Image (cartoon, rainbow, N blue to C red; front, side, top):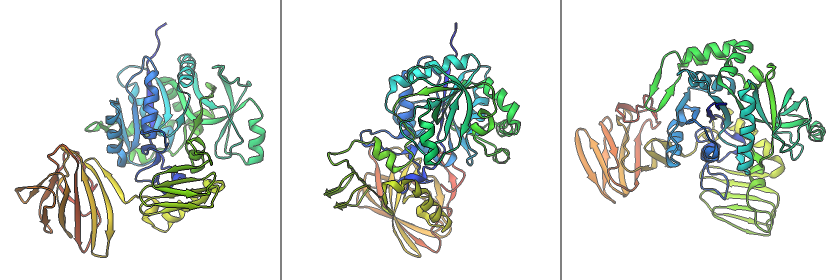
Length: 481
């Protein structure tokens, strides 16, 4: 029997707000190296664990359009060439994202088995994971919609649960029809659920033939399918990216795959998954899966401790000193510090919501901002001036642009800069500078083989990033970013 190709679909949405202040809307957790014994981000680990699967197509990734260059760069550094990177203009939950990918998957006449997985999960036993995928693929080729139920290790209130009709045997690779989905329970109900072998945690991972999913979606949530087809009607290709029609996608219901299909279909089955899984959804969960010292501490970065027990201390820049503390989470970035009892880790999201409601930039954005050419960091600012550190990748270039409200002064501190200024070309070495008057047309280029680092001093009445008029850009950006 000829096996269908497996097409991985990586969902890169979500902001990971419970991992604030490191994970924010501008740079969420899936793009961060969060586990202390890995140099790879969660997205990169997700892609690399798929390399043991045979008969596999290049993956499709779906992300927010603001993160497109971050995704592309992280794939490039691990030598993964995607089939598509689909850009959502805004989040519309999992059902529309999966529908978009399924429509694209069958457009050339093929009908692959879609393997839907999140970009921000941790799996420790990869061999067992590969075996589970193979078993699930057998079910999918028989027309089933397979979801993976995580074998619970404790009563958790942060996960949804799946009830199967038959008791599930750990490591059996045998699926059971789904009885129902259960929303996140309270602790007493969770204790009852984990004692029953019919209940597993809802992993949010799925495996099914693209055509079968679309047929069930049309049956139970036709408006989702209609809106998604309309959003793809115009083939909006942008370099390696597939854009969606914004107005059509905005009309799409904001609904999960569970609510749209899985809770209604008669084709749903659940396969037990016992692979050391974690959704890395909170700082406590990161502490649990990280390597600890003899006192149960996870210490990352510039940290010194004395008489500290069962703590997670992470410094991104400044020195953290811990004395006589226990059971605490301390996470430092260049603009915020989180200090919390480990048992209150689920409440971090509420603080983020308060920051957003108060229009505090710390709730959504970092001072370090990534761009396709590199990144910049806001160092200090006043009412009519600000200082940034800019790093441009080798052979990269900013857009040819001008500003209506600000002038700039660039000082090179590392590497070589090529500056286009009002139709003149300048070459600047270390400790050399150039003044960019207000209203002048200019571009910054790194012609060298090492990163270009410079200090930018901006001055003017208005300093926001939307004061950019672009004339030419190798990255085809149409907005001030």
